[in-house]
Image (cartoon, one colour):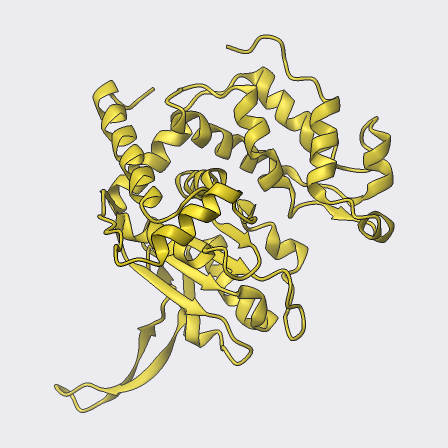
Length: 332
């Protein structure tokens, strides 16, 4: 690896400290928290889905509190306009010359960590404005392009229950999220701890343990993690088997309308590298790929109507593929 052992150790120590700070507030949900961090340090964006009351927003706020970087929240509503996100040009008077000129007033998208709360409650035009910024890492206004600062990490939430008056994200826009995370109900003892700790007088104090520069450094370090050609072939085989008619898995041919594209393979490799680094390994293993597979693929598979009516989900399809596709025997 290009980074020195001392540099790697310092970065991993800060990552461990960040996990500890988040655990002060978030009880349980370990896999979801890890997936959030994996998405951040793999350099992508995350979409979180869960019913109300599962601490999705609190989880994101706590993550932001642990990082000394700019944080903004946008509450998406049906009347939100693109200019409310990216900014707008305003007419100002230059006091030295007396002339009036247009200046660009930056919107909340100019930040390091952005919470897009209930993104499916705003119309497609406004969704597209944010998603363009996510893809290009820049904003265009009045013929001028404005670069977003690094890191730029978008965490969008959506509620799966209330669908009236919502605007579901199209598949092409969903693909811009590196991972699609499902927040589920806590286990019984975890829920007991939540009730006990959140109804008293104690309030956990989350301290920032890294800054924006540390995040960028970890994102670079993730890309240095090695992965063998055999494991890249394993990822490629998994992704190609999501496409009906492209593999020998009959269930996939029956269930799937459209499979994942090459971007899914890129996402799987990057997130697997991040997961390996989190486990203090500098080479990807098959377990890293299997850990991230569902969150990478669940928003990139389009199932047919009959399949959905039978209650089969993209996660079931991914599980079936992982059962059939054999990982390489030796890759280290």
